[in-house]
Length: 182
Image (cartoon, rainbow, N blue to C red; front, side, top):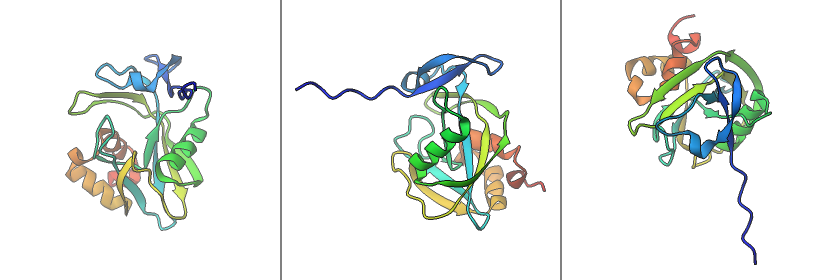
């Protein structure tokens, strides 16, 4: 009996300093202490009551395990539209389907280093999505979640930024609903 074929590696899109694609690399080999600049995305989720979803990253995550963050993040596959990648990750991480989606920070980019030395260095457009129905979080991705009022989340981020992912802290400074500005 021959061994089962291994799954194809998940590829991320590598970028030059101007954000232009220059190739791809296996996601498993990219995130480390010398992480190259690459394409990603973040998504904030709102429910029908205007509450925002925050998730606590699973403890098995390589970078920022157990930290509170936005609803989901991910990487588009080569030749995958960002919106399609967001929908794919919402389904994978939360068992959710987006009813509506809006690109709110198209040029968001950041570089951050976690306590273990793992670097995130991403061009990371930010979306808002609306979902309805119950969530079914993937335990490999999400340890727990809460629905909160955006103003309360913004206040918590400003009071205890160390309790949240660095990308959420940086995004909150640019998102009026979280920055405490109208």
